[in-house]
Image (cartoon, rainbow, N blue to C red; front, side, top):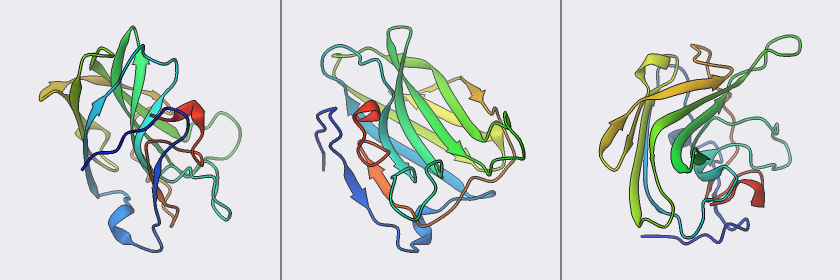
Length: 171
């Protein structure tokens, strides 16, 4: 099955409703993969492929990203990006956003590309990314690599966008 997104906030939303299959915490392994095709010029924004949390739904924190696979334009190529949030520490500047971006990527308007990511929460050295079947290195940014557990709640899973279907991060 496939879905086409217009980059203007279109997305699919899956309710969690206590479904433990979507929730990940320390010790849990997550593997996510997708085929993506970016038409035209690379947009100047991060594009969500899939993510749990950050739906902007009532009753959930706005920074509750349990996990996400995204595509991020850097240096003229689309790279894979993994983002999650841990519990904020006390005081300002306690980076609770943890992001990993791949070194390898692909150009826009170059057809279909397979992206994949595997990670065991609590073990930052376990992260692996693949672009078109080739293992790629990457770097941790923002709050950096951490052994802290991600936030976990019953917020839903969004495919193709985040933050309630925001155009600023839609695929």
